[in-house]
Image (tube, rainbow, N blue to C red; front, side):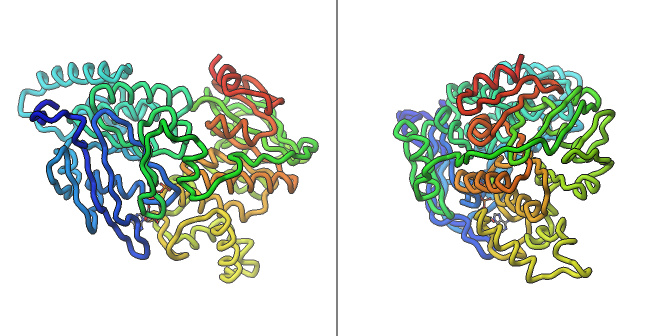
Length: 504
Ligand SMILES: Nc1ncnc2c1ncn2[C@@H]1O[C@H](COP(=O)(O)OP(=O)(O)OP(=O)(O)O)[C@@H](O)[C@H]1O
Ligand SMILES: [Mg+2]
């Protein structure tokens, strides 16, 4: 970084300076006159509600979108980023939520992909190997360069992405919701890596919806609302409450609106579920009116357990009863007909048809209820959807806006709306608030309360421990394919208590 030192200290000039950035899409001003400074060695948290413009701003920096207006300086020099190649040349690396790794290739091959070398293959391989080892040493994480990316966990893939950024000598690393698919432990490791990068003078722009992370890792926080810059402040001056207020523009009286529940007898009873090495032996009961949280580390078998109950995978053995009746579930259709629904964590793969409009997506699983005589009652469909869009504050420009052009969180909300319209008795939520902003999280929590109030049985898979502690009536902790612990006195329980059950 010394090539830039010309009498002025490195820390005085921002690494990145964006001024007056404006960007519109058909029907929406995604960014209006937004400015940003990012300094070497700092973590700047980029915050805002779903659809506020965070990803758009990042894509402009990464060369994926061109701004309509605005200017950019990199270390004091005016620059134009016309595409990803420019961004890379300027030392900017973006780690998008959908990684750009070629999963069929090894870690090492991914690290040096697209880099031209004319030397003999073998020599090159050896050099790259040494370089890969050095990169991972620099990050402080052990990853086998020969492993196929496909075989890595999300956390490991993320580390490879970071190594890839370092391999091209990135000075600015942008992370769009990097912790969304990580367990608490993996987030800690990511933070250790980030601290290491900071110490090496790299500037980090960090997008997240988790306020705890902002307090822990960020130096400054910048808030966008409806495409406009609200405020940028040092985190030392902020509290959780003040960040929420900056984001939503009003005070939230509480983060978790848990209501005292009246809990009845067992509704969903799963016994000795087994499948392969992932679900070794799981029994659980969800009672009438109860919100049961199922937590544990990523890979503990929580999603897989849900998939067995829902019939998305075949169980090798085990049984599922609903209201005392034994169910025969061979596929999701059987489950849905029996009154069980599953809101998946992976909206991209399982929840939405990205090429279709919002209302078309909404109608998909609801064909029967909207089409009692074989055609879809458009009016009913529209009314139902409008209600959900309102309640969940989904930000769309028209009902027919293509799902793929919605912000990440808004896509999640459409998936939610779509399933809520079904009248299920048992509802399994897999990470229901992942990627969802605080304001809408609150709405989802109220929705959970409301469903519980109606006597439904709710199973909520969550990695966010504050959420489990804040909303559940009871918590089960999974570890390596089994239930490893139960917490009944949720009100007095702690995150540490859950973590202990999750790891040992
Ligand atoms: N390609 C596109 N075409 C049309 N509209 C778009 C496109 N990309 C983004 N938008 C719109 O621009 C606005 C900002 O979206 P953006 O993805 O930047 O939000 P975000 O702050 O990242 O939200 P989230 O927290 O949900 O990820 C949204 O209203 C979104 O629907
Ligand atoms: Mg986004």
